[in-house]
Amino acid sequence: MKTITMNDNINSALSAIGRRNWLKTSGATLAGALGVGSAATLGNLMLGSKPAYAADYKALVCIFLYGGNDGLNMIVPTDARYDAYSNVRKGLAIPKASLLGVGAVPFGLHPSMSGLSKVVADGKLAPVFNLGPLFAPLTKGQYRAAAANSELLPDSLFSHSDQQILWETGTSRSLTRTGWGARAAEALATANPVISVAGSARYGSGNLQAPLVLPGPGSNFGAYGLQSTDTGTTQKLRKAAIDALYAEAQDVTLGDAYNVAQRNAFNVSERLGALVKVKPADPGAVAAIDAAFAPITAAGRITSGIGNQLYQLAKLISGNAVVQGNQQIFFASLGGFDTHGNQVITGSPAEGEHATLLKNLGDALGAFYGALKALGLDTAVTTFTQSDFGRTFAINNSTGTDHAWGNQHFVMGGAVKGGQTYGAYPELVLGGPNDVGVSGWELQGRWIPTTSVDQYAATLLGWFGASDSQLDAVLPNLRNFGAARRLGFL
Image 1 (spheres, one colour):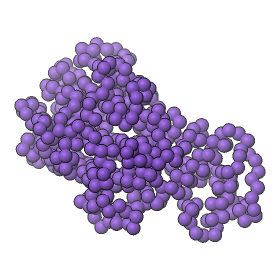
Image 2 (image 1 turned 60 degrees about the vertical axis):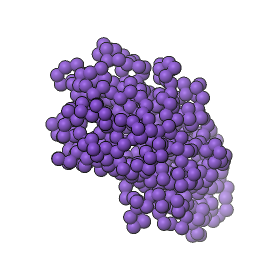
Image 3 (image 1 turned 90 degrees about the vertical axis):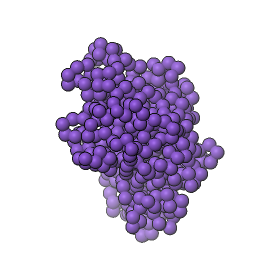
Image 4 (image 1 turned 120 degrees about the vertical axis):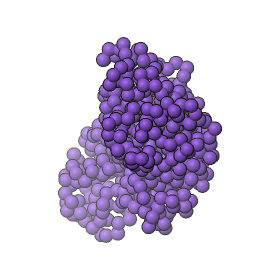
C-alpha cells in the first residue's frame, strides 16, 4: 500500500486511532452497516445522483412475514365455502360475522386487520390466492409421481429457511445466492440497491451489490465520531485523516475498490443520516406522516416494530429526492408467524397470537397508506406481502397449524386494481386436488400452489418498469408459465 502524505496534525490523529486497525475493523464495520458486500464487490455500492421526479417516481415495498403466515385465517371465504372452512378449522375458524369485507368479493379479512379499512374502502387492496414457489405449473398427479430430485419439485418443501430463500430469490432452488429484488435493481440500473429497514435479507443481495441497511427512526446512521456535523477538534482531524486515506490511490485494484466503497459509505451516511434519525414530533418530521401514524404512536414513539419500519419508509419515500433515484425497492419484515400452538385464545378465535400479529401488520400498513395518500404518493407505491409458506388447513393437537406450501397474500397501493381477487382459491377439501396428501396422516391441507412467486413478482416488476426480457433475466422460471406471465392486479 502506498505511503500517504498529509500534515502532521492529520498524521497524529490517524496514528491515534491506528491506521491499520481502522482499515481492518472500523472501516469494515461501516461498510457492513451500510450494506457493502464482500471485498470482491465493495466497489459496486455506487449511489447515483439522478433526482426523483413526481411524474415517474415508483417504489416497491416488500413486507416479509417470517415464520409462515396463516393466510387461510387472514383472508377467509364468506360464501358457501365458509362451511367447508369452518368444518375443518373448527376452533381456529374466524366467526363469519366478524370478517371485514373486501369490496364485492366473497372474502373477508381477519377482524384484527381493521387498520386496512380505508385501503379496502378506496378499492386499493387485492388478495392474491394460493401463491408459492414453483418451477412450472404442477398438478397433484405430477407432484405424486415426481422423483425426489425432480426439477418440478422446489427444494426442501415445508422448511422455514429454504422456503424463505425461494420466496426471496424467486426461484425453486435453495442454493440461489441472489434475491429477486436485488436482481431487479441491477437489471433496471436503479440509483440505489434494495433499501432494507429489516436487516440484510437475501431478497436484497445481488451479484454486484448488497442491500443498503438502515436503522429505525431516532437512530444514528454512520460511523460514530466521524460525521461531518461533529464539531470536536480531534473528531475533525480524525475525519480528515480517514478522508485522505480513502482518497489515496492504491497499488491493487481491490484496494481502490475498497476505497471507493468507503467513500460512498461516508457519503451515503452524511446524505441520509438526518432523514433516518427523524422520529415523530421531531423538528424535521413531516406533519402528514406523523398524523397518519398518530393512531400507533404513544409518547412520541411508534408502538410496533413493523410500524417503526414503515414510518422510516414513509420518510424515505417522502424524501425521495434526498434518497435519489426515480425507482426504489424497499424491504421490511414482521416475524413470529410460526404458530404451531395456541394460535388463538380458547373460545375467541378472533384473538390470540396470530390476531396480535395481524393487528400490528394491519395498523402499520393502514398508517403507511394514509401517509402516502396525504403526500400524493399513493399511486407511486405498491406494497405486497411474502412469507415462508402457508399453513395446514387442518389444525394440530396444540390448537395451531403446521408448515404447508401455497398461501394467500395481498397487494395494496393507489395503482392496485382492488375490490377483486387474483389467482385461484384452493379447493377446501382434505385430500382434494390442491392437497399434496392422499391418505392418513398426509390429509392436512398443504396446498400445491396454482400461482407462482415468479408470476407475482413479474406483475409487480412489470408495473415498476421492467421489460419482458428483463423479467426473463430476473425471474428464471417465468418462461415456464407461458402466456400467463402476469396476474393483472396492477
